[in-house]
Structure formats: structure tokens, C-alpha cells
Length: 143
Image (cartoon, rainbow, N blue to C red; front, top):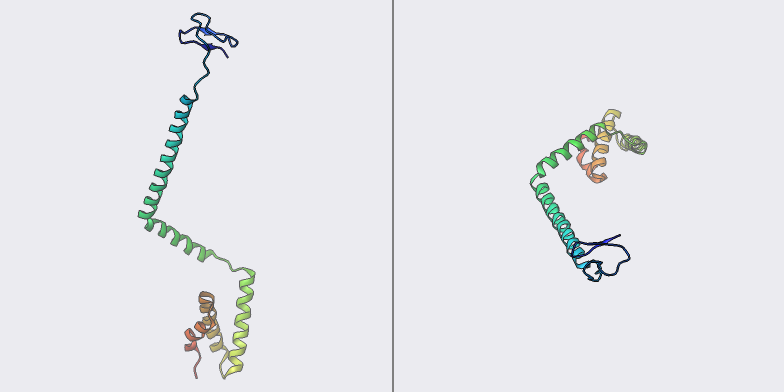
């Protein structure tokens, strides 16, 4: 690539000195490129810090909007949520064994046992505690 001398003369690629004034060819200074790269890196760094700070500020102030969106999404997913085959199998097995043990344990009608077992299953699915399920649903068993 031809190079231009300070006296504005265009010289050939192989010329080591200017053909008009005789000045030697000087390679391009890497310092001129270094400050440009430093300025670009600084702008990117400043933009990144400013962007993260702005995002944190907006998310912090807009928590209600985000919470409302999450609540709506959670409610929608609960309404359309289909039980997995494992969950359906577990629920049926739980109700069956609960009904059998309730009826065999005492003189309890099938309807009372079913009400108790439905309540117990609901509480157990929420808390995963059979103790809490028994305590919450004892109102269904009359002694």
C-alpha cells in the first residue's frame, strides 16, 4: 500500500524515503491506536456499569409490576396445570389407603372417610406433613 509523506507526496510501497524531500518512512505509531482502543474500552465499561445500575434501580422501583405479573402467571399456571401421571397415581393411592385405614380403624362411614381423606390429601400436597394433615382435618372424624 503506498504511503504519504508529510510533504503530501505519494510514494510507492518499496520506497524507504520520500521521493521529494528525502524523509525516511516511519511506521505508523501504535500509540495513536492505543488511546482509541482505550477510549472504546472505557465507553463500553462505563456503559455496562450504567446499564446494570439502571436495571437494578428500575427493577427495585418496579417490584409491584413484576410481582403482579408473577402472580398472574402463577394463577394462570395453577388454573391450567395438569397433574402428572405420577401425581394422579399418588393421589389415588393416598385416597384409597386413607379410606381403608379410616373405615377399618373405627366406625366411620365411607362419606366421612372420603371427606377426611380429601382434606388430608389437600393439606399433605401443600405441606408434605402428615401430622399437619391429621391435625387440620380432624374435624371430619366424629368420635
